[in-house]
Amino acid sequence: MSSHQTSHISFGTDGFRGIIARDFTYDVVRKTAQGMADYISYKYMRTEKPSVVVGYDRRFMSERFARTAAETLAANGLTVTLSSTPLPTPAISLLTVKGYGLGVMITASHNNHYYNGIKVKQGGRSAPPSVTAEIENYIVKAVPMRTAGVHVPTKDFLPAYVEYINSKAAASKMLGKLPGPVVIDFMHGVGAETSGALFNSKNISKLRERHDPLFGGMAPEPVEKNLQGLVAAVKKGKAVLGLAMDGDADRFALVSDKGQYMTPCQTAPLLLSYLLSKGPLKGKIIQAVSMGYLTKRIARAAGITFEETPVGFKYIAEKMLSEDIAFGAEESGGYAWKGNLPERDGALTALLAIEMVIKTGKPVSALYSEIEKKYGKSCFVRRDFSLEKPIPNKHSFAVKIKKKLPKTLLGRKITETNTIDGLKIVLDNDWWVLMRPSGTEPLLRTYAETDSQENTKKFLDLAFKLADCR
Image (cartoon, rainbow, N blue to C red; front, side, top):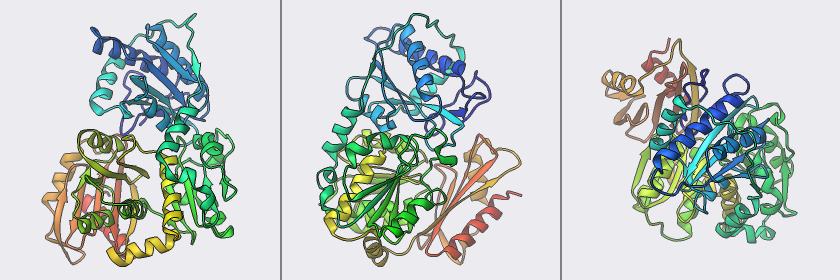
Protein backbone atom coordinates (compact mmCIF):
# COMPACT_ATOMS: atom_id res chain seq x y z
CA MET A 1 0.00 0.00 0.00
CA SER A 2 1.33 3.49 -0.70
CA SER A 3 1.20 6.67 1.32
CA HIS A 4 1.89 10.23 0.24
CA GLN A 5 2.98 11.23 3.70
CA THR A 6 6.10 10.04 5.38
CA SER A 7 4.26 10.62 8.67
CA HIS A 8 1.95 7.64 8.15
CA ILE A 9 3.33 4.40 6.85
CA SER A 10 0.99 1.43 6.77
CA PHE A 11 2.07 -2.18 6.30
CA GLY A 12 -1.25 -3.20 4.67
CA THR A 13 -1.84 -6.78 3.50
CA ASP A 14 1.87 -7.58 3.28
CA GLY A 15 4.26 -4.67 3.72
CA PHE A 16 4.46 -0.99 2.92
CA ARG A 17 4.77 -0.02 -0.76
CA GLY A 18 5.04 3.26 -2.57
CA ILE A 19 6.11 4.93 -5.80
CA ILE A 20 9.87 5.49 -5.83
CA ALA A 21 10.89 9.15 -5.30
CA ARG A 22 7.31 10.13 -4.38
CA ASP A 23 6.17 7.85 -1.52
CA PHE A 24 9.22 5.64 -1.26
CA THR A 25 12.36 7.71 -0.59
CA TYR A 26 15.56 7.46 1.45
CA ASP A 27 13.86 9.60 4.12
CA VAL A 28 10.91 7.17 4.29
CA VAL A 29 13.32 4.21 4.55
CA ARG A 30 15.32 5.91 7.34
CA LYS A 31 12.17 6.85 9.25
CA THR A 32 10.75 3.32 8.89
CA ALA A 33 14.03 1.71 10.01
CA GLN A 34 14.22 4.11 12.96
CA GLY A 35 10.63 3.20 13.92
CA MET A 36 11.64 -0.46 13.87
CA ALA A 37 14.71 0.29 16.02
CA ASP A 38 12.58 2.25 18.51
CA TYR A 39 10.07 -0.60 18.63
CA ILE A 40 12.88 -3.12 19.31
CA SER A 41 14.44 -0.89 22.01
CA TYR A 42 11.12 -0.62 23.82
CA LYS A 43 10.02 -4.23 23.33
CA TYR A 44 13.34 -5.70 24.43
CA MET A 45 14.18 -3.13 27.11
CA ARG A 46 15.13 -5.75 29.69
CA THR A 47 16.23 -8.60 27.44
CA GLU A 48 18.81 -9.12 24.73
CA LYS A 49 17.82 -7.29 21.55
CA PRO A 50 17.27 -9.50 18.48
CA SER A 51 19.74 -9.29 15.61
CA VAL A 52 18.34 -8.08 12.29
CA VAL A 53 18.91 -9.32 8.75
CA VAL A 54 18.22 -7.00 5.80
CA GLY A 55 17.60 -8.33 2.28
CA TYR A 56 16.53 -6.87 -1.06
CA ASP A 57 15.19 -7.97 -4.44
CA ARG A 58 16.26 -7.00 -7.97
CA ARG A 59 14.28 -3.76 -8.14
CA PHE A 60 15.68 -0.37 -9.03
CA MET A 61 17.68 0.99 -6.04
CA SER A 62 16.70 -1.94 -3.78
CA GLU A 63 20.30 -2.58 -2.71
CA ARG A 64 20.85 1.08 -1.80
CA PHE A 65 17.56 1.32 0.09
CA ALA A 66 18.50 -1.89 1.95
CA ARG A 67 21.89 -0.46 2.92
CA THR A 68 20.20 2.73 4.17
CA ALA A 69 17.78 0.70 6.31
CA ALA A 70 20.62 -1.48 7.64
CA GLU A 71 22.80 1.53 8.54
CA THR A 72 19.92 3.25 10.36
CA LEU A 73 19.21 0.09 12.38
CA ALA A 74 22.93 -0.35 13.14
CA ALA A 75 23.25 3.31 14.22
CA ASN A 76 20.83 2.37 17.03
CA GLY A 77 23.26 -0.19 18.39
CA LEU A 78 21.54 -3.21 16.86
CA THR A 79 23.44 -6.16 15.38
CA VAL A 80 22.60 -6.00 11.68
CA THR A 81 23.71 -8.08 8.68
CA LEU A 82 22.99 -7.05 5.09
CA SER A 83 22.65 -9.62 2.32
CA SER A 84 25.44 -9.38 -0.25
CA THR A 85 23.11 -10.48 -3.08
CA PRO A 86 19.47 -10.01 -4.09
CA LEU A 87 17.34 -12.61 -2.26
CA PRO A 88 13.86 -14.16 -2.56
CA THR A 89 11.57 -12.90 0.21
CA PRO A 90 11.14 -16.45 1.66
CA ALA A 91 14.92 -16.53 2.23
CA ILE A 92 14.57 -13.62 4.69
CA SER A 93 11.68 -15.48 6.39
CA LEU A 94 13.97 -18.52 6.70
CA LEU A 95 16.74 -16.45 8.32
CA THR A 96 14.32 -15.33 11.06
CA VAL A 97 14.31 -18.93 12.34
CA LYS A 98 18.05 -19.35 11.80
CA GLY A 99 19.55 -16.88 14.26
CA TYR A 100 17.94 -13.55 13.34
CA GLY A 101 15.07 -12.16 15.41
CA LEU A 102 13.76 -9.82 12.75
CA GLY A 103 14.00 -9.65 8.96
CA VAL A 104 13.61 -6.58 6.77
CA MET A 105 13.05 -7.10 3.05
CA ILE A 106 13.22 -4.30 0.50
CA THR A 107 10.72 -5.32 -2.19
CA ALA A 108 7.48 -4.24 -3.80
CA SER A 109 6.71 -7.87 -4.64
CA HIS A 110 4.59 -8.07 -7.82
CA ASN A 111 4.04 -4.30 -8.28
CA ASN A 112 5.25 -2.31 -11.30
CA HIS A 113 8.93 -1.34 -11.57
CA TYR A 114 8.35 2.21 -10.30
CA TYR A 115 7.30 0.88 -6.88
CA ASN A 116 9.44 -0.28 -4.02
CA GLY A 117 8.56 -1.31 -0.50
CA ILE A 118 9.40 -2.92 2.83
CA LYS A 119 8.26 -6.24 4.30
CA VAL A 120 8.92 -7.18 7.93
CA LYS A 121 9.55 -10.84 8.75
CA GLN A 122 9.60 -12.64 12.08
CA GLY A 123 9.46 -16.28 13.20
CA GLY A 124 9.64 -17.66 9.67
CA ARG A 125 6.81 -15.57 8.18
CA SER A 126 5.47 -12.02 7.75
CA ALA A 127 5.42 -10.21 11.09
CA PRO A 128 1.90 -10.49 12.53
CA PRO A 129 -0.48 -7.48 12.33
CA SER A 130 -0.01 -6.82 16.09
CA VAL A 131 3.74 -6.27 15.50
CA THR A 132 3.44 -4.17 12.34
CA ALA A 133 0.75 -2.01 13.98
CA GLU A 134 3.14 -1.25 16.87
CA ILE A 135 5.99 -0.52 14.45
CA GLU A 136 3.70 1.88 12.53
CA ASN A 137 3.07 3.82 15.76
CA TYR A 138 6.81 4.16 16.38
CA ILE A 139 7.47 5.26 12.79
CA VAL A 140 5.15 8.26 13.21
CA LYS A 141 7.35 9.71 16.00
CA ALA A 142 10.69 8.39 14.68
CA VAL A 143 13.68 10.75 14.36
CA PRO A 144 16.37 8.85 12.40
CA MET A 145 19.82 8.48 13.98
CA ARG A 146 22.84 9.80 12.09
CA THR A 147 24.56 7.00 10.18
CA ALA A 148 27.94 8.63 9.45
CA GLY A 149 30.74 6.14 10.07
CA VAL A 150 28.37 3.21 10.60
CA HIS A 151 29.62 -0.05 9.11
CA VAL A 152 27.23 -2.92 8.33
CA PRO A 153 28.70 -6.38 7.59
CA THR A 154 27.39 -8.29 4.56
CA LYS A 155 26.89 -12.01 4.03
CA ASP A 156 25.87 -14.29 1.15
CA PHE A 157 22.67 -15.98 2.34
CA LEU A 158 21.75 -17.73 -0.92
CA PRO A 159 23.54 -21.02 -0.01
CA ALA A 160 21.53 -21.33 3.25
CA TYR A 161 18.26 -20.78 1.34
CA VAL A 162 19.19 -23.26 -1.40
CA GLU A 163 20.11 -25.84 1.26
CA TYR A 164 16.71 -25.35 2.95
CA ILE A 165 14.78 -25.78 -0.34
CA ASN A 166 16.80 -28.87 -1.29
CA SER A 167 16.10 -30.39 2.15
CA LYS A 168 12.33 -29.86 1.71
CA ALA A 169 11.79 -30.57 -2.00
CA ALA A 170 12.01 -34.18 -3.18
CA ALA A 171 12.01 -33.00 -6.82
CA SER A 172 15.41 -31.31 -6.44
CA LYS A 173 16.97 -34.81 -6.51
CA MET A 174 14.88 -36.17 -9.40
CA LEU A 175 14.97 -33.48 -12.10
CA GLY A 176 16.64 -36.02 -14.41
CA LYS A 177 13.43 -38.12 -14.31
CA LEU A 178 11.24 -35.42 -15.86
CA PRO A 179 8.96 -37.02 -18.49
CA GLY A 180 9.44 -34.04 -20.82
CA PRO A 181 10.50 -30.38 -20.97
CA VAL A 182 9.55 -27.83 -18.30
CA VAL A 183 9.54 -24.04 -18.77
CA ILE A 184 10.12 -21.64 -15.87
CA ASP A 185 9.33 -17.93 -16.18
CA PHE A 186 11.19 -15.88 -13.57
CA MET A 187 9.58 -12.61 -14.80
CA HIS A 188 13.01 -10.94 -14.35
CA GLY A 189 12.46 -11.37 -10.61
CA VAL A 190 14.75 -12.50 -7.82
CA GLY A 191 13.76 -16.16 -8.19
CA ALA A 192 16.32 -16.32 -11.01
CA GLU A 193 19.10 -15.86 -8.43
CA THR A 194 18.58 -19.52 -7.45
CA SER A 195 17.92 -20.72 -11.01
CA GLY A 196 21.23 -22.55 -11.44
CA ALA A 197 21.24 -24.11 -7.99
CA LEU A 198 17.61 -25.30 -7.83
CA PHE A 199 16.54 -25.81 -11.45
CA ASN A 200 19.70 -27.12 -13.07
CA SER A 201 18.51 -29.66 -15.64
CA LYS A 202 18.73 -29.98 -19.42
CA ASN A 203 14.96 -30.58 -19.35
CA ILE A 204 14.26 -27.14 -17.88
CA SER A 205 14.26 -24.04 -20.05
CA LYS A 206 14.13 -20.58 -18.49
CA LEU A 207 12.42 -17.36 -19.51
CA ARG A 208 13.07 -13.79 -18.30
CA GLU A 209 16.00 -14.90 -16.15
CA ARG A 210 18.08 -11.77 -16.82
CA HIS A 211 18.23 -9.01 -14.19
CA ASP A 212 16.02 -6.19 -15.54
CA PRO A 213 14.84 -3.57 -13.01
CA LEU A 214 12.10 -2.57 -15.50
CA PHE A 215 10.78 -6.17 -15.58
CA GLY A 216 10.49 -6.09 -19.36
CA GLY A 217 7.89 -3.31 -19.14
CA MET A 218 5.22 -5.24 -17.22
CA ALA A 219 4.46 -5.87 -13.55
CA PRO A 220 6.20 -9.08 -12.34
CA GLU A 221 2.86 -10.53 -11.30
CA PRO A 222 2.23 -14.14 -12.39
CA VAL A 223 -1.31 -13.66 -13.70
CA GLU A 224 -2.65 -14.80 -17.07
CA LYS A 225 -2.21 -11.53 -18.98
CA ASN A 226 1.49 -11.34 -18.01
CA LEU A 227 2.32 -14.96 -18.83
CA GLN A 228 1.58 -15.11 -22.56
CA GLY A 229 5.28 -15.76 -23.32
CA LEU A 230 5.26 -18.74 -20.94
CA VAL A 231 2.04 -20.11 -22.48
CA ALA A 232 3.57 -19.82 -25.99
CA ALA A 233 6.85 -21.48 -24.87
CA VAL A 234 4.96 -24.39 -23.25
CA LYS A 235 2.97 -25.01 -26.44
CA LYS A 236 5.95 -24.62 -28.76
CA GLY A 237 8.26 -26.83 -26.68
CA LYS A 238 5.53 -29.40 -25.95
CA ALA A 239 6.38 -28.95 -22.26
CA VAL A 240 4.79 -31.06 -19.52
CA LEU A 241 4.19 -27.93 -17.48
CA GLY A 242 5.04 -24.23 -17.17
CA LEU A 243 5.90 -22.49 -13.90
CA ALA A 244 6.20 -18.82 -12.96
CA MET A 245 7.25 -16.75 -9.93
CA ASP A 246 6.59 -13.12 -9.07
CA GLY A 247 9.13 -10.34 -8.50
CA ASP A 248 10.21 -11.42 -5.02
CA ALA A 249 9.65 -15.15 -5.68
CA ASP A 250 7.13 -15.93 -2.95
CA ARG A 251 4.19 -16.37 -5.32
CA PHE A 252 3.72 -19.09 -7.91
CA ALA A 253 1.65 -19.74 -11.05
CA LEU A 254 1.10 -22.87 -13.12
CA VAL A 255 0.51 -23.41 -16.85
CA SER A 256 -0.68 -26.84 -18.03
CA ASP A 257 0.90 -28.92 -20.81
CA LYS A 258 -1.98 -27.69 -23.04
CA GLY A 259 -0.84 -24.09 -22.48
CA GLN A 260 -3.76 -23.30 -20.16
CA TYR A 261 -3.09 -20.81 -17.36
CA MET A 262 -4.32 -22.50 -14.18
CA THR A 263 -6.03 -20.08 -11.81
CA PRO A 264 -5.11 -20.38 -8.10
CA CYS A 265 -8.60 -21.91 -7.65
CA GLN A 266 -7.43 -24.72 -9.98
CA THR A 267 -3.80 -24.89 -8.80
CA ALA A 268 -4.64 -25.25 -5.08
CA PRO A 269 -6.82 -28.37 -5.59
CA LEU A 270 -4.11 -29.91 -7.83
CA LEU A 271 -1.45 -29.45 -5.14
CA LEU A 272 -3.77 -30.52 -2.32
CA SER A 273 -4.92 -33.61 -4.22
CA TYR A 274 -1.30 -34.60 -4.87
CA LEU A 275 -0.31 -34.07 -1.20
CA LEU A 276 -3.27 -36.27 -0.18
CA SER A 277 -2.16 -38.98 -2.62
CA LYS A 278 1.16 -39.23 -0.74
CA GLY A 279 -0.59 -40.34 2.44
CA PRO A 280 -3.20 -39.10 4.93
CA LEU A 281 -2.94 -35.41 5.78
CA LYS A 282 -3.34 -34.54 9.44
CA GLY A 283 -4.66 -31.08 10.25
CA LYS A 284 -6.98 -28.48 8.75
CA ILE A 285 -7.14 -27.17 5.19
CA ILE A 286 -7.29 -23.37 5.23
CA GLN A 287 -7.57 -20.84 2.46
CA ALA A 288 -8.29 -17.17 1.90
CA VAL A 289 -11.95 -16.23 1.59
CA SER A 290 -11.24 -15.20 -2.04
CA MET A 291 -10.43 -18.82 -3.00
CA GLY A 292 -12.50 -21.55 -4.63
CA TYR A 293 -14.76 -24.47 -3.80
CA LEU A 294 -12.73 -27.38 -5.24
CA THR A 295 -10.38 -27.43 -2.24
CA LYS A 296 -13.43 -27.34 0.02
CA ARG A 297 -14.96 -30.32 -1.83
CA ILE A 298 -11.67 -32.28 -1.66
CA ALA A 299 -11.42 -31.58 2.09
CA ARG A 300 -15.06 -32.63 2.54
CA ALA A 301 -14.50 -35.91 0.64
CA ALA A 302 -11.37 -36.65 2.71
CA GLY A 303 -13.17 -35.83 5.97
CA ILE A 304 -10.75 -32.99 6.74
CA THR A 305 -11.77 -29.78 8.52
CA PHE A 306 -11.88 -26.79 6.16
CA GLU A 307 -11.73 -23.10 7.15
CA GLU A 308 -11.48 -19.68 5.50
CA THR A 309 -9.31 -16.71 6.51
CA PRO A 310 -9.29 -13.02 5.57
CA VAL A 311 -7.26 -12.14 2.44
CA GLY A 312 -3.51 -11.90 3.10
CA PHE A 313 -1.03 -14.73 3.59
CA LYS A 314 -0.16 -13.47 7.09
CA TYR A 315 -3.53 -14.83 8.34
CA ILE A 316 -2.67 -18.29 6.98
CA ALA A 317 0.83 -18.07 8.51
CA GLU A 318 -0.58 -17.19 11.94
CA LYS A 319 -2.91 -20.20 11.85
CA MET A 320 -0.05 -22.46 10.76
CA LEU A 321 1.85 -21.39 13.88
CA SER A 322 -1.01 -21.67 16.35
CA GLU A 323 -3.01 -24.63 14.98
CA ASP A 324 -2.48 -27.95 13.23
CA ILE A 325 -2.66 -26.93 9.57
CA ALA A 326 -1.99 -29.35 6.72
CA PHE A 327 -2.31 -26.99 3.74
CA GLY A 328 -2.96 -23.28 3.17
CA ALA A 329 -3.65 -21.35 -0.04
CA GLU A 330 -4.45 -17.80 -1.11
CA GLU A 331 -5.85 -16.32 -4.31
CA SER A 332 -2.71 -14.43 -5.31
CA GLY A 333 -0.69 -17.64 -5.74
CA GLY A 334 0.67 -18.29 -2.24
CA TYR A 335 0.79 -21.91 -1.02
CA ALA A 336 2.18 -23.57 2.12
CA TRP A 337 1.96 -27.06 3.58
CA LYS A 338 2.97 -28.92 6.70
CA GLY A 339 6.66 -29.59 7.24
CA ASN A 340 7.91 -26.26 5.87
CA LEU A 341 8.00 -22.67 7.11
CA PRO A 342 4.59 -21.02 7.59
CA GLU A 343 5.40 -18.99 4.46
CA ARG A 344 4.57 -18.99 0.76
CA ASP A 345 7.54 -19.83 -1.43
CA GLY A 346 7.61 -19.78 -5.24
CA ALA A 347 10.61 -22.10 -5.68
CA LEU A 348 9.33 -24.67 -3.18
CA THR A 349 5.89 -24.73 -4.83
CA ALA A 350 7.45 -24.99 -8.31
CA LEU A 351 9.43 -28.04 -7.16
CA LEU A 352 6.28 -29.61 -5.65
CA ALA A 353 4.52 -29.20 -9.04
CA ILE A 354 7.52 -30.82 -10.78
CA GLU A 355 7.47 -33.68 -8.24
CA MET A 356 3.72 -34.13 -8.86
CA VAL A 357 4.29 -34.60 -12.61
CA ILE A 358 7.27 -36.96 -12.10
CA LYS A 359 5.67 -39.12 -9.39
CA THR A 360 2.21 -39.45 -10.99
CA GLY A 361 3.63 -39.86 -14.50
CA LYS A 362 0.76 -37.64 -15.73
CA PRO A 363 0.75 -34.16 -17.26
CA VAL A 364 -1.08 -31.32 -15.47
CA SER A 365 -4.04 -31.41 -17.91
CA ALA A 366 -4.71 -35.11 -17.14
CA LEU A 367 -4.39 -34.58 -13.37
CA TYR A 368 -6.75 -31.60 -13.50
CA SER A 369 -9.29 -33.40 -15.64
CA GLU A 370 -9.44 -36.13 -12.94
CA ILE A 371 -10.23 -33.42 -10.37
CA GLU A 372 -12.95 -31.95 -12.60
CA LYS A 373 -14.55 -35.38 -13.11
CA LYS A 374 -14.59 -36.00 -9.38
CA TYR A 375 -15.29 -32.55 -7.93
CA GLY A 376 -16.76 -30.43 -10.73
CA LYS A 377 -15.63 -27.55 -12.95
CA SER A 378 -14.17 -24.29 -11.66
CA CYS A 379 -14.37 -21.03 -13.54
CA PHE A 380 -12.93 -18.26 -11.36
CA VAL A 381 -12.75 -14.59 -12.38
CA ARG A 382 -11.67 -11.51 -10.46
CA ARG A 383 -12.86 -8.09 -11.56
CA ASP A 384 -11.95 -4.75 -9.95
CA PHE A 385 -14.32 -1.80 -10.16
CA SER A 386 -13.26 1.82 -9.70
CA LEU A 387 -15.42 3.80 -7.27
CA GLU A 388 -15.89 7.52 -6.89
CA LYS A 389 -14.53 7.42 -3.35
CA PRO A 390 -13.05 4.74 -1.07
CA ILE A 391 -15.33 2.68 1.18
CA PRO A 392 -13.60 3.21 4.55
CA ASN A 393 -15.42 0.57 6.58
CA LYS A 394 -15.37 -2.86 4.94
CA HIS A 395 -17.52 -4.49 7.61
CA SER A 396 -20.38 -1.98 7.58
CA PHE A 397 -20.38 -2.15 3.75
CA ALA A 398 -20.76 -5.96 4.01
CA VAL A 399 -23.51 -5.82 6.65
CA LYS A 400 -25.46 -3.20 4.64
CA ILE A 401 -25.52 -5.42 1.50
CA LYS A 402 -26.20 -8.57 3.54
CA LYS A 403 -29.37 -6.95 4.96
CA LYS A 404 -30.88 -6.33 1.53
CA LEU A 405 -30.05 -9.74 0.01
CA PRO A 406 -32.90 -11.79 -1.48
CA LYS A 407 -33.25 -15.46 -0.51
CA THR A 408 -32.08 -16.67 -3.93
CA LEU A 409 -29.56 -15.51 -6.53
CA LEU A 410 -29.18 -16.93 -10.05
CA GLY A 411 -32.12 -19.20 -9.16
CA ARG A 412 -30.18 -20.86 -6.31
CA LYS A 413 -30.66 -20.60 -2.55
CA ILE A 414 -28.14 -18.54 -0.56
CA THR A 415 -26.73 -20.89 2.08
CA GLU A 416 -23.95 -18.78 3.57
CA THR A 417 -22.91 -15.16 3.96
CA ASN A 418 -19.41 -14.58 5.26
CA THR A 419 -18.26 -11.14 6.46
CA ILE A 420 -14.67 -11.85 7.63
CA ASP A 421 -13.27 -9.79 4.73
CA GLY A 422 -15.91 -7.97 2.71
CA LEU A 423 -19.02 -10.02 1.87
CA LYS A 424 -18.89 -13.54 0.45
CA ILE A 425 -22.20 -15.01 -0.71
CA VAL A 426 -22.29 -18.80 -1.15
CA LEU A 427 -25.13 -20.61 -2.97
CA ASP A 428 -26.42 -24.12 -2.29
CA ASN A 429 -24.26 -25.57 -5.13
CA ASP A 430 -21.05 -23.94 -3.75
CA TRP A 431 -21.00 -21.13 -6.36
CA TRP A 432 -19.86 -17.94 -4.67
CA VAL A 433 -19.19 -14.25 -5.14
CA LEU A 434 -17.03 -12.01 -2.92
CA MET A 435 -17.11 -8.20 -2.73
CA ARG A 436 -14.10 -6.60 -1.01
CA PRO A 437 -13.69 -2.82 -0.87
CA SER A 438 -10.02 -1.79 -0.85
CA GLY A 439 -10.34 0.44 2.23
CA THR A 440 -7.44 2.64 1.08
CA GLU A 441 -8.25 3.35 -2.57
CA PRO A 442 -11.53 3.87 -4.46
CA LEU A 443 -11.72 0.27 -5.58
CA LEU A 444 -14.12 -2.64 -5.16
CA ARG A 445 -12.57 -6.05 -5.75
CA THR A 446 -15.06 -8.69 -6.83
CA TYR A 447 -14.37 -12.40 -7.20
CA ALA A 448 -16.69 -15.17 -8.36
CA GLU A 449 -16.54 -18.87 -9.12
CA THR A 450 -19.12 -21.04 -10.88
CA ASP A 451 -19.00 -23.92 -13.35
CA SER A 452 -18.77 -21.73 -16.51
CA GLN A 453 -17.49 -18.38 -17.80
CA GLU A 454 -21.06 -17.36 -18.57
CA ASN A 455 -22.37 -18.03 -15.04
CA THR A 456 -19.34 -16.40 -13.41
CA LYS A 457 -19.82 -13.27 -15.53
CA LYS A 458 -23.54 -13.19 -14.56
CA PHE A 459 -22.58 -13.45 -10.89
CA LEU A 460 -20.04 -10.60 -11.15
CA ASP A 461 -22.60 -8.38 -12.92
CA LEU A 462 -25.02 -9.15 -10.12
CA ALA A 463 -22.41 -8.26 -7.49
CA PHE A 464 -21.86 -4.92 -9.19
CA LYS A 465 -25.59 -4.19 -8.94
CA LEU A 466 -25.81 -5.38 -5.31
CA ALA A 467 -22.87 -3.21 -4.30
CA ASP A 468 -24.53 -0.23 -6.01
CA CYS A 469 -21.21 0.96 -7.51
CA ARG A 470 -22.56 3.56 -9.90
